Length: 286
Image (cartoon, rainbow, N blue to C red):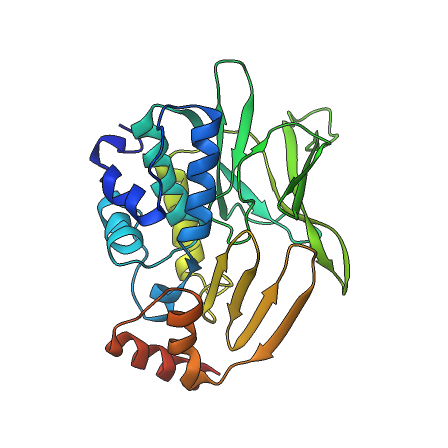
């Protein structure tokens, strides 16, 4: 009952992501669910900008991400996906990651991930809440590059540290192929260990990400949607389009046009009152 799979409206979720297939807990089913989730439910932090708390209660997540056709960020996506996995009988471990995006130093554990394990011993990393894929789970094996319709990733693993007096578990790194300082290359996206996490752990990360002035998600709207062909990102008033080959282009968007862009491109149709509040907030903080 840790992830409340029995409380999930499975039919509603499957309708939201457009899946009508065999739901036995197999790698094929996992890949279908992962692909459909990442390409159907956007990444967004708009509730924070609108002055509302981010709830990880399953009922609230189903209302927001499933019934109201909104999106969320990693803790919301991963908590909902964990409930789906639990309901369908997958064996999995929740994890926390440290988003690096090429930065040095130790970053806070502010990203939610899941590893699913099958009876044959194979393990797959599920990252449904980053906003840039991968389209499907990546087998937890260091070295091989995965190419999912042009979106390329790979995993590496190394000891977390070298201090002989301290126990250091292995640390995994997920790499993505894309823009690195203006050129196409490999960027370390986030680092994680296989230390199990529980809803209480994700709740702590969620609180920091949604309330801290040091969080990138409390300072401006940040919205993403992802498909096999393209990724769209709205970062404040900058709208960026990226294709699997790493090519990207950006343009400025007028604040008044943001609600229409959210509806037309990202599939987020805000009520008029929320759209007005968002525009006013952006003008005040811009």
